Image (cartoon, rainbow, N blue to C red):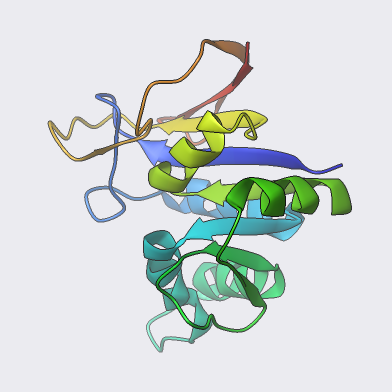
Amino acid sequence: MAKLVFGMNQSLDGFVDHMAFGPSPALFRHFIEEARGQAGSVYGRHMYEIMRYWDDDHPEWKADEHAFAAAWRNQHKWVVSRSLKSVGPNASLVEDDLEAAIRRLKAERDGEIEVAGPTLARSLTELGLIDEYRIYLHPVVLGAGKPYFAGPRSPLRLVGSDLIDGQVIRLTYVPG
């Protein structure tokens, strides 16, 4: 059975914004290894559209960008959307009954399946489907933006912490 994991970069004041701050080279290599090991990813429409950037090679990319793109392209993606009519390569559209689709996905797969984006994570949290939360805590303060937790949630229990690149701490929580 697969484990559903929601993990994102977060500011000290609880916000996520890929344009305001990004991973260091060491953290980016960590994310490459994470992507290589995942059984797939579940995206909401907005986050999927952002990540489609990795579908095409860009001339300015260096080796790490090419490695991440290859890992991202290789894994299957499930895109939760009622507005999209089609999705790109190696992706499936989830249009109806989110709970049934994700329960089936977890039962049919092994390994970790990434949940991408706080809005989708909120829906999956409300359904009790997320098994683990990974906060990559960056030493920045944004003051505003989209929060990592898009809504209230039941208590979490800390099960791990790792210093990733000398500045970013990965905090790992499970429900309960």
